[in-house]
Length: 122
Length: 466
Image (cartoon, rainbow over all chains, first blue to last red; front, side, top):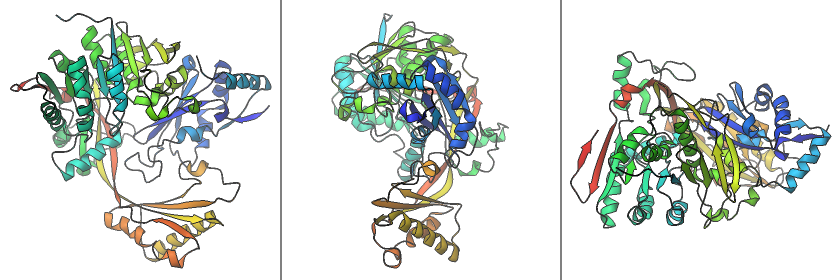
């Protein structure tokens, strides 16, 4: 099975609240949603963010929009106004999640190509 | 009695303190909106406003209220658009006075400007604690004791109801302090449609609409992680407009006169922004459930939102307090090819050795190599090829400003003493005060009994009421 980075198929946006960061991860369709559900677990995301996220990672599922919300605790060196990091607001956590690699069945790679042809959603 | 509208159109005016006002002016001109809602207060903003207020007691509200109101007040009279903003920050009365001053300057009369106060509870914290209110951290459960003597501000998040009250008193402009981000957007719907305080599904829909609008272009193609190259005319991006029906369902769109992109893909990214549990997004007005929401493209740059549901509002309000938490010192220096990264790493090693030999002690020392790992930290991949240049950035967490500054003094000698080709020396960055944030939940009646709405009419004498 081909191995891809999430950036090739997914969208993601993050936000900060206190010392927490949440990352919305959006699958392009239901089949990818099911793959993400199996492969992009809270444990794996926690280990992906080793060195940045010190607390637990909680995953919430939104099958209605084929999305997951990852809430990362103790993730911002104290929080926006207390952090000495360059990215003190954690604006780049979502792009960092898009580095995450998953294995995808060959058949789905076809669909992926289709999405690239017609990505507008309209 | 006012007639009930079929739909209410609300535009997003500003998504944060410092946001451009041009898209809101275009929305006022072409968007046929009834209301413009601002969200000026991020968590970090309160810290910025506090620093302003410490320098000048007349400040503490967003300074750009002057430019934004100057640009939009003419449309209040010309088109009957009402402006709802939490630009008051730590000084809502000062912000209201500024709006009144501008209105007079523009020769306006019969303009009603309301202010909501009571969110600022910094003066009551001591008595609350002595009366036995715990104020433990809402997430960690820690006691407030270690930080309570260092508190600089404390504001409770108010919901929509005081803004609704101001609208009922005829306000054209409503200025608040720490209201929730979406409160400015739900309030007009309660006022126009007469939604009751326990109509949870409709209230939830209104909050979610506000959530999609509160960060301005983040639902119209800004910060879009999909194919952002598709977003039209980003240099003059349009801000979102919601057309809301009495049922609570709504359409997100924008004016065609400005750029941007409103699709299911742009809107859904904003849907989860700064959300914790999507089945229980807690606000003072209602607890919102997003797990059944449906997004549907119904036209070019038009997305319809349905299926938002709500649960009863909480008995508590969130209070966010800021406390002094030391200073950050930082220095940035550049190194060129060849061996740029290796030189930067060597310099980091030199500085750390000098800190040790001089007995400089910091609570945290943080090193970044800008151009390689300053944004993605330990997850950044080691560059496969040699970098043309890289900037070393070192930051320290110090207890005092003086200690923070000691970092800066280590760097100048390196221009002659250290690795070669160090250029681009940003050594004079002043230390920045760090503020810790403390969030607690407190019974809402303790706060709400002191919330006041006052309406002043420009050109007439003052009138006030609760």
